[in-house]
Image 1: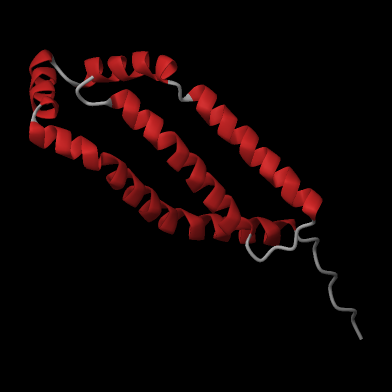
Image 2: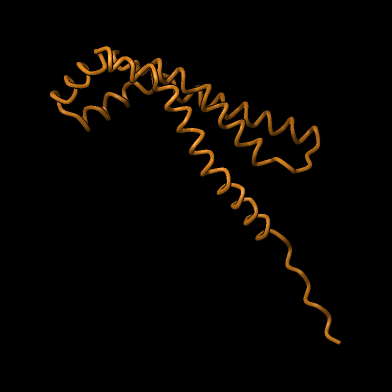
Length: 137
């Protein structure tokens, strides 16, 4: 509760969806697509967003969080975290966490988008039909 895990999750979901939409936009930039293809792409993105929202609910994640924390920290660690996050400095850290996540997401995109674009180029190159050999004279 003092770590605001549920609120952090709720704040993160729109950022994940926005990041996903931005990544798709960047991956398809410069490609000529019909309105039908764009609509299909939007439906895929929407469906994936709904899947993310269905999967990443607090009710589903809370037991996972508890298990991870139990496996990772002992009671003294948990008591120390509760004291820290229950304090004014700990609450300020939590207040800034959405900004931290936003900056982290942007930095990760800067790394991943060029890699995804290169992968698209590699796939397109591999899927090109073989060019016929020039005719011998």
